[in-house]
Structure formats: C-alpha cells, structure tokens
Length: 286
Image (cartoon, rainbow, N blue to C red; front, side):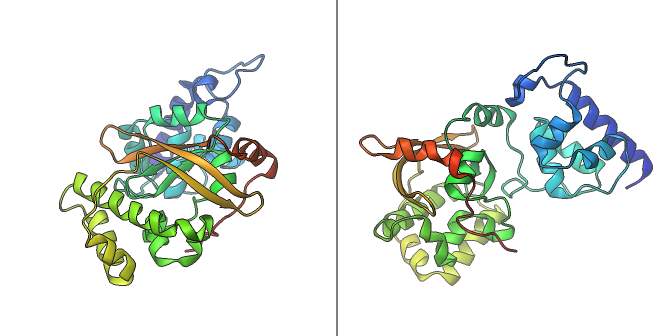
C-alpha cells in the first residue's frame, strides 16, 4: 500500500466511525461521551481487533489489513456495499465476490441481528455460508467464522464431512439431507445460470457424494423458510427449536433466529446458553 492510500484509509475509517451512534450498533451511549459517533475502542471491539491495531489504521500506519479484517470493519461500521468495496480498494485487497465469507451484509440486516440479543441468530448466504453470528448463535451452533473455501458452506460440509451431522440426531439426518438439497436447487435456480460459485458447489457435491447425487436427481425444489429441528448441544444435550428465516430482497442472504419449540423444555436450555458460553461444535480448519 502507498502512503497516500494508508492516509486515505485512516481518514475514511474515522469519518465512518464518527457518523454512527452507539445505539445504531447496540451499544449504550454512556455518560460524558466527548466524541461524535463511536469510540475507537468500540469499533475495535465490534470488529474483533485490538485497540492498538485499529488506532494504527486510523493513523494511516500499521500493517496492511487482511481481507477478513476489512470485512469485519465493514460490518462494524455498517458500511454500504459501495463503501465496503471502496475500503477494499483503499487497502489494495481484491473486492470479494458475493456469496463468500466476506460477503457484504446489508446494514439493515445487521441492525436486526443486533436487536436479537436474547435469542440465537445469524446471517447466512443462500448457499449456507455463515457471514456473522451473535454470541448466542455461537454458543448454540459453534463458531462458524473459521471455515474457508468450499468448506464455508454448511451444506458442503453436511455431505462431505460426517462429523458435521453430529449436531443433529441420527434419526433426523435423512430429512435434513433432502431439505438441504431442495433448498440448494431453489437457490441455484434463483442465481444467474452462469454463477460460478453455485455451479462449482453442485458439481463438487455430485462428484463426491452419492447421497447428494441421488437426492439431486429427484429434482425437489423448496426454500427453507422455517423449520422445527432438534439440535444436539455438546454440553446441554438435545434442544428442540424453531428456526425462522428472513430473506433479503434478492434472496442471497437470510437472517436465521432460533426460538424454543412449544411444549418442550428448550426455553430453559436456551437461557443457559449465555451461562455455558461458546462451544465449538465443529472445529474449523483450512
């Protein structure tokens, strides 16, 4: 990165930080706030960065931010799609294609996620790549932020990595497999016919998973809009929940949130998630 781009990067980050009110990102205003917008340490916290590192970025110094850090900063600062792309270019990083783990999450969807502090919730793509989770979703489902490449898709892992299915009782696996395939076919059809990400995913799964190939040949089509499912938590055991979906306008992203199933003891178990803390249901690698 050139010195000029470093300086512009710092100026741009500061300008975006100063326009955001703490309430916009779910933070208390607090007394004696002497600066407009967010404090530097608040942005660092939201982006999962150290305060010293973020301070260096705003000063136009430090090391070149990674693509993952740029994506985290874009979400923390509620950047628009154009602003996010500009940030990538200032950092001399390639603007990611829509659909991967660095996909832009609409600020409105992030705002809704921030308001669901008392229930597990996350934003995923139509190919089931997790983009962002709240703490209770991490506690319920494990931290999904470490997966890269094709493995970032939960559907890909479902058909290629048997341990992924440990999150669900064995008796439910067939139903979930059929549902995932029907949902994927609907998502692929909604995308452009030449979409490389969706096409590559389907071709890979057809090659490596006979189960997927057999279900794909059935041509079932159905978006997953809501579901009642049983999850197996590593500490709390089985939890039965309703999983509800809110779709973005273009269908590329979904906000999922989980509520206790009526007639079960799941409400109490979900309340315990904040006590249990995060559990890595599946450990990311690669």
